[in-house]
Figure (cartoon, rainbow, N blue to C red):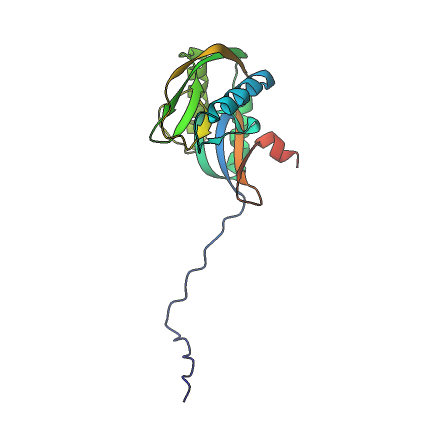
Length: 195
């Protein structure tokens, strides 16, 4: 005699349905390179990739300098963060990138420069603004670097023959979204709002 399906016991717990919170964004605060700096960094990344088999190059439109990593953030607090960033009083300045190195543990190769006090002060202003809004972020010490390659086995430090000048302007709230094939794409809050 075939087994009969058992009726669910009224007292048996039902499996939890994952609760999806609407309008949660994966965010960070970053500086975007001006077009000449972006093009030079993109060319540098392309050249270095040939020396690091199996590495993955950051595309030109992905190159950025993170000032604070926030992570998941709902839309209303994200709007407040974007507005706070617009209120940061700063004059544009030049940051010179003159070397490359790597973080072996994270397996990345990056470009950076000498300590630039105005850059450090800008990162502190961003983090103070996030504290005042009670928006959580990664409190790791600020390290000014631009990731060029990922999945690098070992990166050797090198000096750039021709330093790259990056004109630093207002920081932006950046949203990381996945495209249809699951690849992360970065867009600023302004770009997202124009949709």
